[in-house]
Length: 78
Figure (spheres, rainbow, N blue to C red):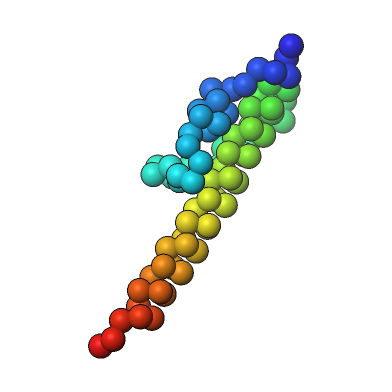
């Protein structure tokens, strides 16, 4: 069945533990040429989802770090 095949990048992302953000930056995937086949566009869409998820995870992580730092700096007595 064609729809059940998972790409290598998608399998890797699904196997990663939740709550962890990859150290290396994920780059925005290159857009395939207009005459690219459906498989190339399908792969591009999967990689875009991974890239958008990475951006969201980084934003959440930054927010949690900032709130923890606010708690640390807010409770210190100088």
